[in-house]
Length: 308
Image (cartoon, rainbow, N blue to C red):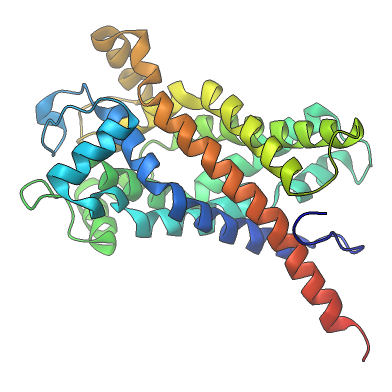
């Protein structure tokens, strides 16, 4: 068995909640530069006056990262990291940590879990997470989109961003793009968690793998690819709309139509490779860490409660 061995005691909802948030933060630390590159590629093509940053031309994942390092310095790859970590602690804890509990709620505790219950649970926790963590996502995207130069900075820091957005755009500004984000995260959550569940169950049921690290790695990688294919179009619209100046788009739908008219269908898959590299690697780090954290915390709990 690779990694921590499973305990006889199943992890509690609290353990899953804390473990998911912690694992997501660890995954973000490793993959944040890819996420930043994805955002830069997604917003590329908008009119110059609508984005408060230099109109640098980015080509590919590593070309984008290289250009950013040369023109803005290495730290630019971690623009918005603080908001990103805030987002994961509030976002992943809900959408991933509560997934099993919500799934059990829909199945009324039954051992047989159909794909319908899995999809419904994924949609529910994804929507709940967005409702709670949307302001952190808006700030993260704004920081990632801005060039790391003095004349292009929209905000001085994370707290300044929250205050400025609320002052200039109202509280609604902090929840800008909620509709496309709920759509995106319903798709992401359903695809990511359900695909991970199904691949993991299939590998274990067919005795190809046991419940260990290689199984978690394979399941997470497959989930990352499927999620990227399905969620990329909505993700691009979400990023564009969140980063847009006040009044630039009438709605998320208007943003999508404008993109289609001006840049064509391929615009919806801008940043696909960094999205896949980021989601694939993020899923691997997150799910592997999450599984091990659950086992470690439950092992510690069992040891703590065991009589001397």
